[in-house]
Image (cartoon, rainbow, N blue to C red; front, side, top):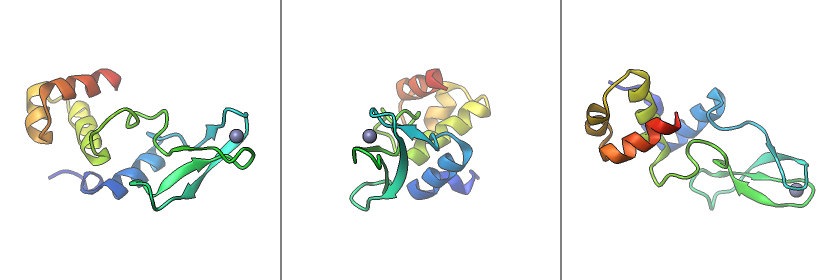
Length: 109
Ligand SMILES: [Zn+2]
């Protein structure tokens, strides 16, 4: 049985923030430090916001999750498989995604 962190997206997000898989600090293009604010219109319910120029960006900006259509918990499960040294084929079976996708994520880790 897998860890509860891979059960749902919100838990996966909280875990990733705590573990540093998502940056806990972002610098805006105006060089101001951004901070996390709640945004219920977003799937993650959180975004980065600049206190100076008010620009916003995804909470996942710059993270391993940013360019993927996969759910965060699926990506965490793939990382788990990588850490356990599962083959691409076994990981593909465990995670329910293609071997090609597994290969792409493995190459980023
Ligand atoms: Zn700014």
